[in-house]
Image (cartoon, rainbow, N blue to C red; front, side, top):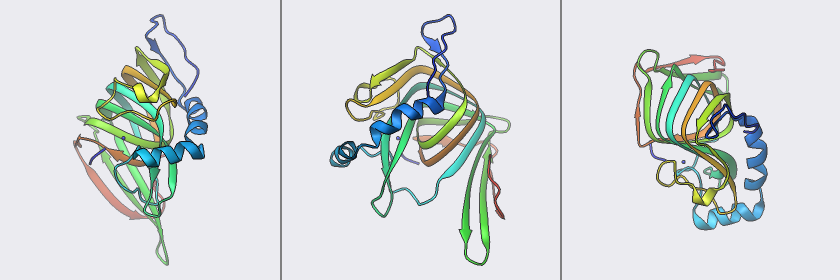
Length: 211
């Protein structure tokens, strides 16, 4: 795989905090939805995913995600029909996920709903490097160290190489991140390496999602 919310509650350390992800989306989406901004993104090739995304989103859940080198900024994906899709890119240099679940549901004529479910990391955690996730929804309990909120997206320097957005757009970054009860809906996930311990994949009839 290749390539990549908001009441702050200080907890004694000025470099640590907790952020509500859904509120971050309220700040990020208006900026990336501007027509002029999207035109600039296309001209500069600053699309989040390095491939045309499918017409289906997928869901991901995990009991916990811990990571080093975190960055998040607004961007756009593009599908095979050349339609632009606003996303919030979450980029992490090194990440570990416990009890990972990924699901996607496809509706087919006559057959109906078909679900593809992937699970891993029940014992040893899933490991990823240079992880990029292009998401439209993310929730959970998040904790950061040395977080910077409201940084210009073009100047990000704590995430993986290439984890930068367009100039003048809102972004945030931190030395470390920890999310428990992760729930995420995304268009694309990319990583330099992705180690799935205890991988199990299942295809079944009906709608069976991670959450």
